[in-house]
Image 1 (cartoon, rainbow, N blue to C red):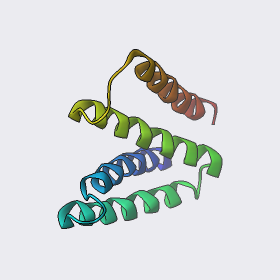
Image 2 (cartoon, helix red, strand yellow; image 1 turned 120 degrees about the vertical axis):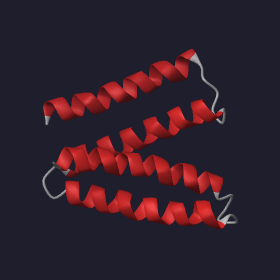
Image 3 (cartoon, helix red, strand yellow; image 1 turned 30 degrees about the vertical axis):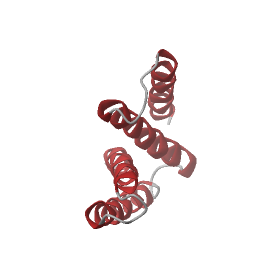
Length: 104
């Protein structure tokens, strides 16, 4: 169960990162509100998962999931440039997250 909560918390990290960018420095209220809600959910999920998972592993997975989804969202919306190097590095990041899960 801790792993499922951790993955969901990582997904919320991607949501708050995208909402933070969309809020344009907290000038737009709807994305700013979404940022704070997603941030709270993300942190709460990470904290809960760390009750049973090692802190380093949980944090690395949380960051990996959030960073991966944020980058994929950037590719999908055209905010990030899709290149072969970026896609290979993204695969390496995802592989590292899977590897951390496999050895824990």
